[in-house]
View (cartoon, rainbow, N blue to C red):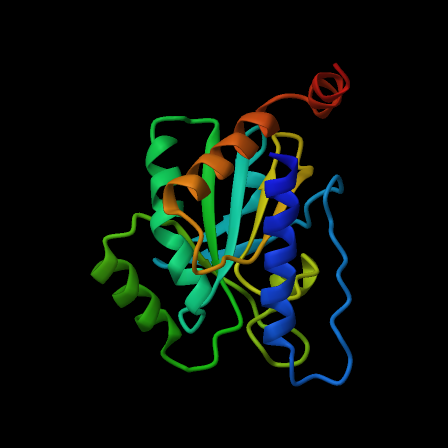
Length: 198
């Protein structure tokens, strides 16, 4: 499992490198695992304000994506499987953060994409950053590319971070991996450390 995790992390970083291939300076990878998750309040597709604080005590899966991002959309069948597994679990929430959109009608595109593919995702729209792009939370979470997923425990600590999605990845395996991270995040971090040392 550890080898698979390292392979996925490497493939995610490779995807991020491809996104920034034209840049003269390679992106700096700065993971925020085991740190307090940056707080936020964003609007959902109905215009309602949603805060990370609303989910205190729950495991929260944040999935950063965009309508123009091929790997993001390729990962969604697996993410829908994960959402379905936890639809009756009141202690787990999935929030899909639409970020770095490049067109004015991105909200319409999001709605059409979700409806066409029958995805039951709770989507939030990233805020405007200082540079005039819809990427404030993207920057707060120190992303270098999308898709990127964060699993936050009930205490508000980022327990896992998953970067990228490759074409040969399996939907069911992605759902299993996300479920495994969720189950670990339900337990105190010290429990996972003890289990690894045995």
